[in-house]
Length: 326
Ligand SMILES: Cc1ncc(COP(=O)(O)O)c(C=O)c1O
Image 1: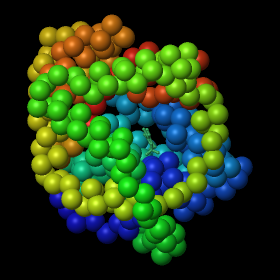
Image 2 (image 1 turned 180 degrees about the horizontal axis):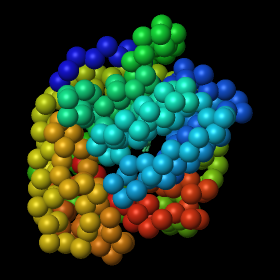
Image 3 (image 1 turned 90 degrees about the vertical axis):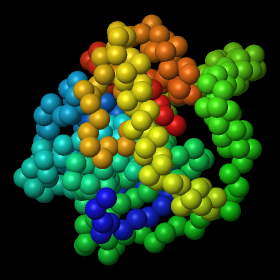
């Protein structure tokens, strides 16, 4: 992997790193931020926190922008490396040069992933973020990347790390996940089903319903736990990247004859995938879960779309699933 000159700061969550990135991009109250419509609500809460408004651009079935609209209030544009696959940044660089706005590389999904030249994702734009906790099973841990030398001089200082331990939930999940990989039984999914049933019996709801409030939640940056940072440092990165790339080919072969449409034809060189993304309806996703049960992985729908996008969302936004390799 190529050496990078990026300066890093660590936070509990990616959305907190994004608040800092927006601040460094000089996004002020009343400004606008260009963001893909295929996005989760957490990203909108970061934009809302700095007092800015999202302006959406659409992405096609390859998850690349259809076009990048311009408006005078837009001060930053967010490009997303969906599922750890490198987004082609050329159209974004052109846009940013033309209109003098800052590019933020949202690499929430792509810890350990690099582009074909070996450049770590998150380090390709002046500003980037990575949600490490999506790749390693830890309760918190995210990173702000500042590759622009001028901006790295004004980067906020590292916030204090918290002394909170990893917690019982972390240990149980880790144990169940290990047992799942050994026994090839979907133990974690069974445990989750029991938790949901208990929630249903006490609240009447199977899953916690996220309301529109989540998009306007105020995000307060805090440092991650010492214990999470220790897990990040202890990770055998090569081993984890290998596990993920091998899992990608196994899942890809197992789904070869199924009804799904993979988002990507093949895994690009140096890519460490967050999972195996595919398009399909809910029934197909259930079939996929049955097929991959023995791999100790779970099929999830992504993203929980923003309210403003939901009403007119094209099929490829609503039918997007991920075999999650966490
Ligand atoms: C594309 C993207 N960006 C940013 C975030 C925020 O990351 P975190 O959940 O660590 O705040 C997410 C979370 O799902 C995401 O999917």
